[in-house]
Amino acid sequence: LTLTQIVFEYEQNCTDTVELPEIHRAALAGDDAALDALLAAGVDADERDASCETPLHKACREGHYTTALTLLSAGAIPNMRDGLGLAP
Image (cartoon, rainbow, N blue to C red; front, side):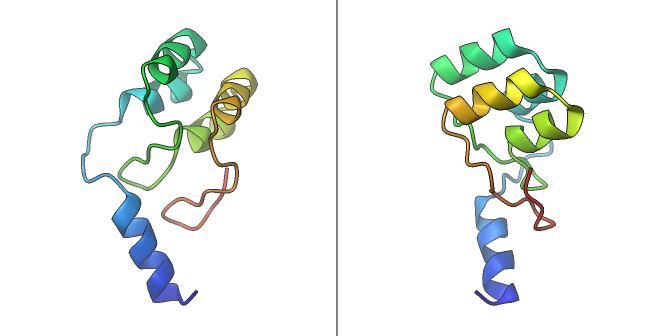
């Protein structure tokens, strides 16, 4: 892949909303009960925010081990890159 293709892929998959998606707020807070409810309701474990981060990026960065495991168990992709090209 060229750099242009990579950037285009990220831009196509990022949300354009400024507000943080609910599943991201749960992952950031390590709120496993809220996360379980969201996943059970069908929310995508790999939903991206405006910076192309996934909930797994936030859970890992904040050190929420059980939250990260829950996301991985729900099918989160462990090597999905954010807008800077970083994986969780």
